[in-house]
Length: 324
Picture: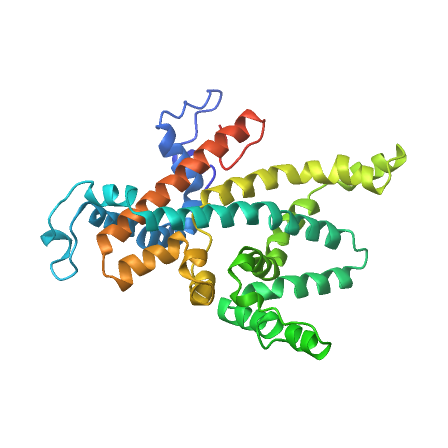
């Protein structure tokens, strides 16, 4: 507890200054923050057991791994699996699909939570604001199976949209099986499912804005759009930069279940991303070492993107993921 080290030492004699605390700095900080360290110890333990310890399994990427003999009995082959990755057209096709989907969603999906947060924040009635928040972020808790089923019932071959078109003499359009519309389809699914949940982060940032700034801007003659541009958006910039950096770190991870469920409908050439590629290569085809190498490359690229984007954020005057 704070001051515990002072209580442990005898009181100085009357008229004499207290002797300096010559304990090492880390000891003083440990005595000061031991309560907080005890509180976070369970979370650190779970993180270590389920995230950091499994990282040791990446050693199979450098082996001709066989689950029958284990890591200890599998021979070392060095960077052979990584050389296979560089010459595998399937890996590069999946990489191109992944980056294309990431770039498209970054442009058309990322701004939606911001706009939704601004819309909800502008509502004057607290009850209406809570109702809108509950409605828009409820789909986040739906599974991808349910989300895709709903889209199938709405815009699939026998869905509501095609029933309406047939009843009015128009040709049906099956959006769910059209490879040319797959990019738009998965983005629309992501927006419907997660935009409301993402807006919570921006609503939290908006709640920290000092209301006196809006009042001062109004006194200076600023209208609603001027206040939005000069007060609200600058308050969101640090959060936008942070989420953008984290999103770049997941540039090669666009999802697994969403694409696996729709892969057969549009074909592997369109829906194959790195996550599904690793699954079919490593689990279905039992090439665990090659899949581990592909996953390791994906993780290293994501780390490099986070570090690079964070450096750019520092140069632009923002804090980024971590301070300088």
